[in-house]
Length: 474
Ligand code: NAD
Image 1: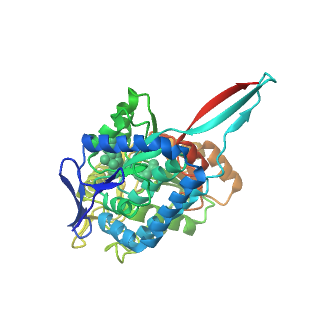
Image 2: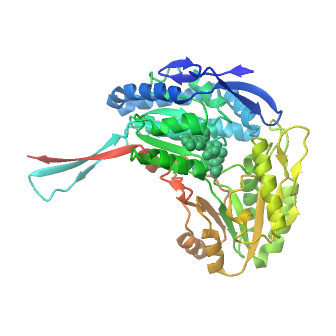
Image 3: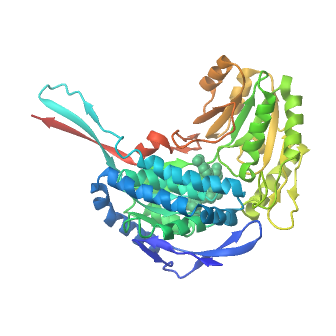
C-alpha cells in the first residue's frame, strides 16, 4: 500500500491532523494507498504559501512561466505508464481510457504553455484625443481548485495550467475518492514547481474544501463537481463576494432525427453512455429517437449494449466497476424507482456479479415519462432511457426541459435540421453526428444548474484573469 503526501510550499507533508484517507481499488476492493486527511489548518498553510508566492510568480515573464508548464507536461510523459496504472487502480478506469486521460493532461499543459505570448489586452479609443485608454489583463491571484473523482487528473490540469500561465498561484484539492494520481504528480513535480506556486492538499469537502473556500486568502474558487457542492461553494464565497467558476452535473440529451445514420448514432450513443461506466458529466444520459427510426435504433442499441465488454479494467474494452459501493447503490435505486414509475427494461436493469467490484449491467429503459426522475436527474451510470418523439417543437422542449444545461447531441444528415436544432437547444455544448467528448481548445461551460463560467481554450484562460482599465492623459 502506498503512502502519499500533500505538497505545501514545496514540501511533501502529512496532514496536520496526522489522519489518513484510505483509498480503495473499486475493482479488487483492496485498499491500495493512503492520502493525508487535511483540515482547516492545512488549508491555512497552503493558502498562505500560495499568497506568499503569487506576487513574484506574476512578475515573471509569461514565457518563463510557460517553461514550467512544459516541464510539467514532460514529467507526465516521462511517467505516463505509472500514472495511468495508478489512475486505473484508484477508480477502475479501463486501461485505454486511463492512458488517454494521462496523455491528454500532458497535452493540456503544453496547450496552455502555448498561450504565453498570445493573450492580449486592448487599446480602447478615448473620446479625448489627448488621452489613451489601455485595458490590462491581470491574474486574479490565489485560486482554489476543487476536483471530482471521475477525471481527477485531467480536471486538476484544467485548473492548474491556465491559472498558472497567467500568473495565479493555486491550492488544489482532489476528491478523497481518487487523490493518489494527483499526489504522485505533485511528488514528481516537487522540484519543478517553485515553492508555493501550486499546492496540493487532501481532505473532505465539507471540512478542508469549505475552509479553502471561506479563507480570507483565497481569491477565486474553481469547482468541478456536483450541483450540491456548487451550491455550498456559492454560499461559502457569498460573504467574500468571490468569483466562482463551477462545472457541475449534466443530463445530456441525444436527439436522433429520422434521416440520421442510425449505425453511427447507435455507436456514438453506446460509447457515450458506457464510457467509464457512465460516470461522465457530458455523456448522453437520455436519448430521444424519432418514431420512424425508433424500432431500428432500439434493436441495434440493445444488441450493442448486450455486446458491451465490461469487467477487469486492465482488459475490458468498454467499462469496469462503478467508483464505489455508494454509486452502485444510487444507480440501482434510481432504476428500481424508474421501473416502479412505469419504465420498461429493454436490457440490463440490475447490478452485475463479476466476482469483485461494483458492477451495473448496461441498461436501456423504454417508455420512461419525461417528468420521471430517470429522465430528469443525473444517473452517472451505464443506464439510458430511450424515448420516442414525433413533434420537433416538443422534443426540443423536452431536451431543454431539465435543470441541467451542459451538453447535448444531434444526429441528422440535414444541414438545415442541424442549424435549426443548434438554434433551439439551450446547452453549453452540442455535438453533431459524434460522441460526447470535448477538446482542449474548445469551451466547456454549462447552462442552468450545470454551472457558471467554464474551462478550455481561450475563454478558459480568461477565467483566471481580471481587467484593469488605465486612462492616461498626456
Ligand atoms: P462532489 O460534488 O461530490 O465532489 C467534488 C469535489 O467537491 C470533491 O473534491 C469534494 O470533496 C468537494 N466538495 C464537496 N462539498 C464541498 C464543500 N461544501 N465545500 C468545498 N468542497 C466540497 O462531486 P463528485 O461526486 O466528485 O463528482 C461527480 C459530479 O461532478 C457529477 O455531478 C458530475 O457531473 C460532475 N462533473 C462535472 C464536470 C463538468 O465539466 N461539468 C466534469 C466532471 C464531473
